Length: 171
Image 1 (cartoon, rainbow, N blue to C red):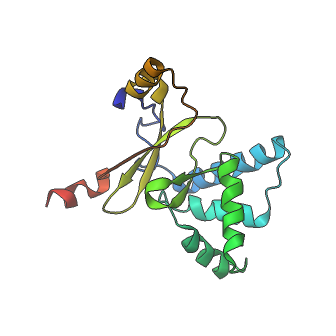
Image 2: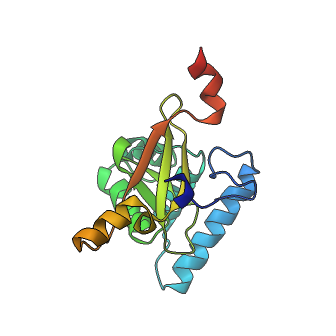
């Protein structure tokens, strides 16, 4: 499956584990989200923007209630529908992904185009890196074609240890 993963940053590693200018990463992601919404005639409300900002703060998946707590701290209200509506919008419009294994959300690192993400989740620090995958070209695609099955959606999530935690895991 590794051959199906595409590089996600200039250094060749999935963004999230790679060293990068995080301030620029966040500002570029917010600008891309604004452009995406403007181009698609979508309303990028202050709450939706704030939720995306919260997701962009770290390359870690956050649950809806953790997001709601941060929204409350910023004065955006404390009712769960506030967070869930914003998250539904972000996921539906390709600006965020749901990490099924964690029942949490993460900002998309490739919001400008349709793709099939693969997530690598560190079991020690909960960092999440997103890479692109092509399951239709791998063993899953071969099995689907052999049975006449058409893949419409896949969720690829791998749990392991990120580079920053590798030394801790060896101890």
